[in-house]
Image 1 (cartoon, protein in one colour):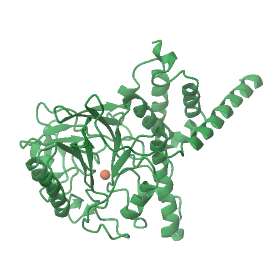
Image 2 (cartoon, helix red, strand yellow; image 1 turned 180 degrees about the vertical axis):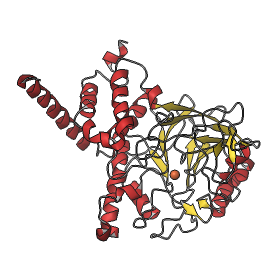
Image 3 (cartoon, helix red, strand yellow; image 1 turned 90 degrees about the vertical axis):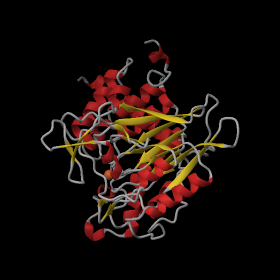
Image 4 (cartoon, helix red, strand yellow; image 1 turned 120 degrees about the horizontal axis):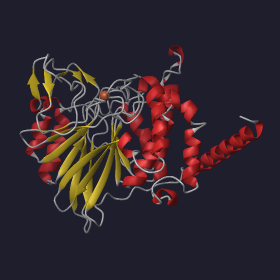
Length: 419
Ligand SMILES: [Fe+2]
């Protein structure tokens, strides 16, 4: 490469980085979350991301996943279903002998801000529940982390439930952050739909955590006093999903082992894939029976990173697993390495029903004049995971920003509209 071309490229990248810094500064403007309400067309859209599970650095491409899904689907709400950070990875840069609650809190704040700043930037409300990895470091509790989320103007989560341990600000094994969000009708202040956000805990004597009796009692009290169409979100797979799978012998083709020691395949007619064994806690407090009794249509969860099934229970509850959204953990390789994506959930006011579609990143970026660029970039992350960020922030990321700033790339860009 001759000197002139090198200089021109350097100037281009510097300009892109400068513009990126200006955009980051502008992103700090306050976002006031509106009351949740159906749109005039009677729809309400949710995009669910789950299991980012990253630490001190956050994959630069995942920031653009958030921006791009926001631009295409214009969701009314983003929902994060836990393992939003890996608290262990977030503290990995602090030597064990130097770890204090104060510097651990600073590292956790950085890890959370990495993506919450992007939700503030796109100006769309977001809520979340914790997973088993969010607060397992032992230094920073769910309560502390929840306060960091609350520093973000896009965050609309609350924690009204006195669940077991909820007031223990130093323990990680509680259920802090369980809440409900009412969505008003498009033409009145009447609640037309309700979202339940259950913190499924982290670990217990039954292996993984599960939703506790006090949380179920809280849910039942709300749906009994004012029953509404509803769906639920949580991190850990409810144990009862195994009642709706087909139990088979270990040597059956496609059999996946579960944490209860049994093997399963998906029932015929179910959507999506079960690429790994399901990992619920080994105990339940009767959550699924309660959800069925009060007409909650579906429970959306993550935790198992390469599963995407939708399985209907005999009692009418749809279990929906969404695969992981970023590069903080598996899948590392093999046939499931490209399953990452987000779930787009549409609520319909007229029917009171929720439907969903898993949109993998491959599917999202499969069309248009920039598909080659986006997939090339995605492939680099598939191969290198979070390590690709250091290359990306000097190559694809600033170019992506520049092309969008020039109106060449992104939703509705004039250049894209030509195709
Ligand atoms: Fe998990």
